[in-house]
Image (cartoon, rainbow, N blue to C red; front, side):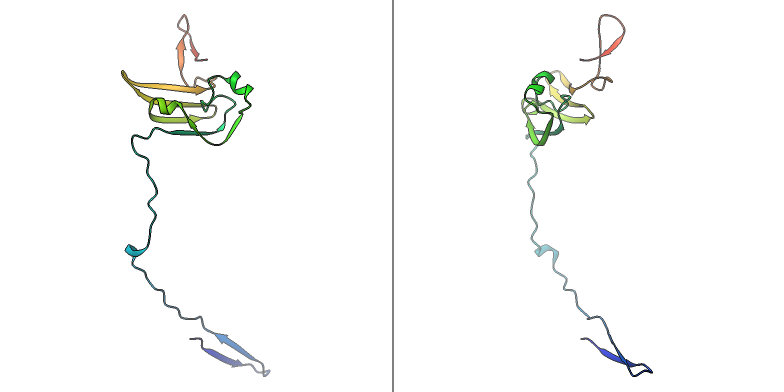
Length: 137
């Protein structure tokens, strides 16, 4: 209920003041509030989605950078399913600027796969002939 008070000033003008309405907040039983159960991926699901800059081959969408340049896929603007993860059991995925790496399970234990540019040996080193180390190409 609003209470109105008048304050008469010396000049004969009146000001009206109102107090805030007193409202009661109804508390609901939280167990009765409907909630949506979002679907959760099963452990057997093996889907990996990629999107972003694909010009360096970091997403692993095409088999070669030359083939990728022919089909003009510099940027993948929406999540696209990566078929690599459907053929192998991916345990972990890591991504960086220009490369991606995938840890997979195999018969002999675990394997590490990499895609993208390897200018700074982000994916790894290999020996070529001697003891000097050179990035994979």
